Length: 346
Image (tube, rainbow, N blue to C red; front, side, top):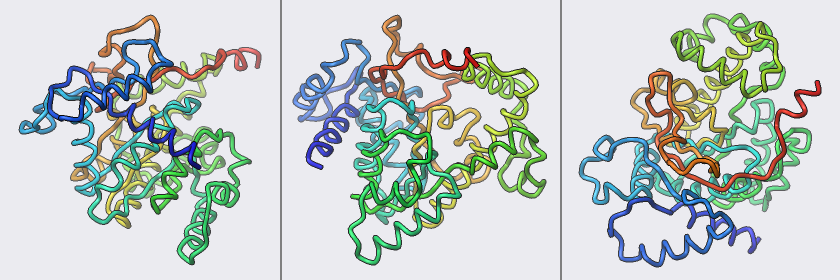
């Protein structure tokens, strides 16, 4: 437990690293010195840096530190939670650093809610696992000391394909007494959506989830291109339309789970892959269409590339060239093999 807390502390320090910062805080020198110590394993110049994609005036023209990226992130995320909105923390699933940063962000921002009941919604938990989550919550409320292992046992985590890298996130949620919500749909529902497309859901359900609102031709084409790339070009083209709808359905369902969590608890944080964090066509898009009054802040954790040192080149963009995330946090890449090798053999 002590080792885990040290890791979380280090991750929180990493999340605080800034680019182009003004001398706004007297503790900043020591803070950046600590950041340098935690970033020694990554020699890339962007590692540990934060990039805000919007102009400072677009967030708060009266902000005291308009060029301090950490202060801007902290102010935006805190404002979203405090106002009853949503903070989205987009990850690369197999990068352990991303989950340490997510855990640190939960500790940092969830407490800014006036009600202290910020809920945490997980892409990694499906709605058919919610009964296990509810049992976990009930036992916790009845005075039992519940652990990450207890939660994972109750939801059947070992039967899923998700790694144990999420333990720090679960630990931060449990230690903070945060409500947990399953965000994704069941595997059967995903497969049905991929097979039948829009026909997999009733017209009433599509309307409720804002699935009846077209993304637009350019955005639909971009989504299909992303699906093709993610599957290494190994899928037949006739499968793309159904898979694109399945992706939309997952985003819409995640948004629905978030809005349910916000209504019950006051604010929410989403733990999900970076694809779901896109502001142009993913979860934030559905929240905007259903609850435009909610402030949504999308933070993406992005791996550095030794061939690129220009921070702006990492920003995900929509087909019109506009940023598709509010903040980028740069991290070292995870060690992994060729993700397409297995698909090529199929």
